[in-house]
Structures are given as C-alpha cells and as structure tokens.
Image 1: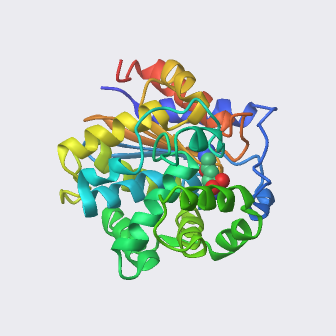
Image 2 (image 1 turned 180 degrees about the vertical axis):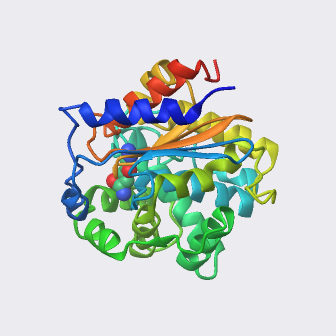
Image 3 (image 1 turned 120 degrees about the vertical axis):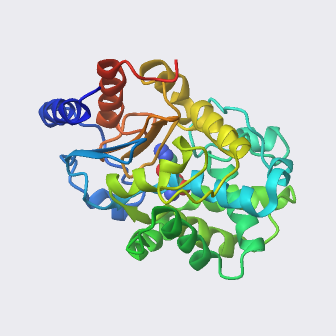
Length: 304
Ligand code: DON
C-alpha cells in the first residue's frame, strides 16, 4: 500500500522551499493579483480516499483546464461530429498561436489550444438553451458540489484584454468554422475559463476520467470510448508545446491552466490536482510540474 499522505507532505515541503517560483500570468490582469507563494495538492484514489497538503482547499481560476470539461459536454451533445470541426493532433505550438489555423484552413489542431476550445464553445452555444448556466450545472453535477461557480471579475478582466482570442474567433469565422457571433462565443469561453475551484474540487470533477466515465456517485457522464479519446488528447495536447516534456517527466494524461492549476490522472488508480500560480515559459505551472514528477517517481505509478 502506498502512503499517499506522506508523499504529498514531502512534495509540499519541497514546494515551499523553491525560490524561483515562475511568473504569474499577467496578460489577464485579475490573475496578476495572486500571491506566487501558494502551493496546494490534493489526490483522490480509486476507493475515494482523499489526501491533501498545502493550500488544497483555496479557490483559483482553472482557466484552460475547463477545456476538457467543455469538450466532454460537446461529445455528450453531438458525439463524433465534434471531430468534423476540430482535429486531434498535438500542435507543438503555444496555446494562443494562430499561424497553424491559417495554414490548415480554419480547422484547429486540437480542442485544447485556444482556437480549438473556441470552436467547442461555439458548439455549446448552438446546442444549449442557457449555455453558461447549463455548463455550470453539468460541472456541479459531476462534482456533486453546487458551490462551484464562475469568477465574474476574471471573466470581465479577460474580455478586456483577450485580443488574441478575438483574433482567433474572427479567423475561425472567416473560415466558416464559427456559427454564432464572436462576442457571444467569447463571452461563454471567458466564463468557462473563469471557473473557480480548489485542488480538491478539481479532483472531484476529474475523478470520472480515471473511473471509466463515472463520477463519484457512480453516474456515467462519458462512454468508455469517450474517456479513452479525452485522456489521449490530454496526454498528447494537454500541455501544448510542453506535452512531450510532461509525458516524459510525469507520465500521466493531464491538463494545465494559466491560473497555475494542473490536474492529472492514472486510470483506475488516482486523480491528482496541484496549484502553484507561477508559470514556466511555456505557460504551465512550474512547481506543479515538479510536484507531479516527484509524485510519479516516488510512487512508481504512471501510465508507462
Ligand atoms: O484563453 C486564454 O488565454 C486563457 N483564458 C486560458 C489559457 C490557458 O489557461 C492556457 N493554459 N496553460
């Protein structure tokens, strides 16, 4: 039996001693206010035992981690038709780059880079009667936690400075790969990114990706085939131009966000989330990556 709590305690000790903690994402002004010193980690195992250390109950902005959840809901709603509008290849580019989109005629490389997530947002805006409310309900139901909510101040802050996302949405529109108004789709997109969660809540939402599509109450939200596809996309695309490094160092499917969160999972074993707001040059949490590398090295648990 692995003593997860001891491993998490050791990771937390190491994390508090790191001096160079990375850079806060200041292109979303509201995120720039967060103290770089935070660190939290939470793990839930397949028996639903919970382990935590550090600031694991503090709320933070999950940002791009939300892209996995909108993709899940889009697959629920229109199934494999999703793949007519977005591809499943790693981009090897930063999350906000647009050059490939033009070269590849408006079909984003994958649903986890910004243009791909904007296409998924467009699908949800078309399919849902009240997109923001319905998506929030979907997430709350999976987590069995009605306290999860959007952080309006983060959504507004990103809307005011999200010039590249406006460019991406307009480019998609010019290629006929955006059916709704740019403003409406981006309002939804900025809200999904503003979802506020703790490490503990994140593991409760992502538990289903390690548990064959079933949430903690054993209700199925995804088919086995959908879980396979989403976990494969997290592994190959979840860390943008650092996906290879994350697979190499950590060896788990996962997803990062510029709020400094990372969630990762080992099917049938555990789901883990870390939060440390300082980012490395690729936009992924610097200490979060070190922490997860230590977790899989110490426990000798990874998909490989
Ligand atoms: O669209 C953006 O730029 C942000 N709302 C999300 C980017 C993000 O989290 C990238 N992940 N590491």
